[in-house]
Length: 199
Image: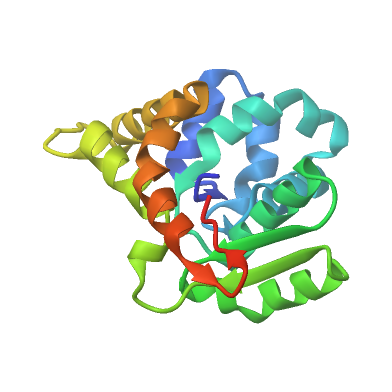
């Protein structure tokens, strides 16, 4: 899930007008200028209140294209991610997370409590990247997509990273190779009669 915020800059309104959004709708969007929405759902809710459901549905793709801005991942975005995880997988979910500050936000804790035990979050020890399998994938992504490369625009950088992720999604073997060494080491650890598996 990407870290995107949504907002209308002066340039956004001009671009929307050039892209075919009727002038009357651009004017109705003007009060939203300089406001930032931390999630897509919050922005779409405001769009529906401003333009109405029919116009929002009709111009949704166009408006989103010109209002997405790069942002930092935050507690609101993390809760949206957790909702997607629960929607995609049936049954109970155990999610192992690192020490990002937004993981411990009260909004996140409240959401987890609202799942009535369906979602359990386990936190990795601080400063333990070796326990976090995703770190190896990030290292390969940087090597393949961003290291020693020049990007004229942020969009070009984003496209390069997305291309690497799509490769991982198409070919699970890339991920399996990255995790193989970590899995072998984890399989050697024994606690009583139990084997700890890190997948």
